[in-house]
Image (cartoon, rainbow, N blue to C red; front, side, top):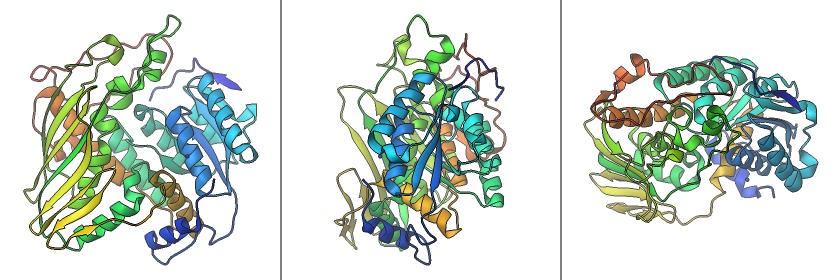
Length: 427
């Protein structure tokens, strides 16, 4: 195993035939997964935690020609646990010798340098994703990138530049905004865009749920290692939960609107998760997004144990209302409709779509799309943290906020204090 832990760097059984049919509907011209043969898709994984390992398994499920050939993570135990799980479930298609196992802050460089790798799954904490996507595209690799793809405006601009480079090089970037590949949402959006609910006049989106996992710090962990292991709770690693999780719902609203908001105003706070293990993030946000046509969207997200859960998008039109939850997707009003068909697991479908686009020679590129939705969530956080209304243009073109640490190395890593609206500076 290559070990470079002290290097300093300055910046889910194969799917059934129905999956191919679904993909044919998604890509103009219609093409099955194996339209151009069954050449192996050799995958390297950057970020071997639960989501990275899960995304690798989803990719294996998507296409029987997928092989996992390289693994990278900050710490060796996650590479070892990922390799053990992948080998147990897909032994014949996991070939990762010690020479293709990389750890340390430079692990992504190792994965990107493996000649056999032609597709990279990037699932390290969001704060690392601008660096990892840039390196992967520069190395000529296709990408599946977990969302969100950045935690600050500087990172968003980097992702957009990387997306443009990927287009020039004919490389794919598919993001983990799986609703974009889910049949119920594809059919819902077609109806919205065909005018079945009339003109959109308002929308609401929610991700309100209970608490999540937390990693306690042990005596042998430096500040930096603990923050990376407990990454949900630090703004520089996760972007806060409005960015890391609620970006899914915000992305659906942007999809329906066909536009980005022009102004954002938010409020939030830290009322329940106040202990040190919860880092420096908030536990609730409420945000108003104002779109160019004057439509205002209410967004809520909360991670609080013992409260009501609600994960939903609701689009209000002049002729009806479209809404979707985990259990139902429907339109009420002048043209009522309820989704009742079967669908492939969207976490697998997104990999089916990615691989099919590569085989077709028409690689999907969702880089700018996911970067812009990420930016919406970031602006919401920035507004809540500072108590200031923020325009899209200012955040995208002027903000200099860069949350990356001074150096990527084990040791001390002081973080910003918990934000106080009205006192925290807008940068």
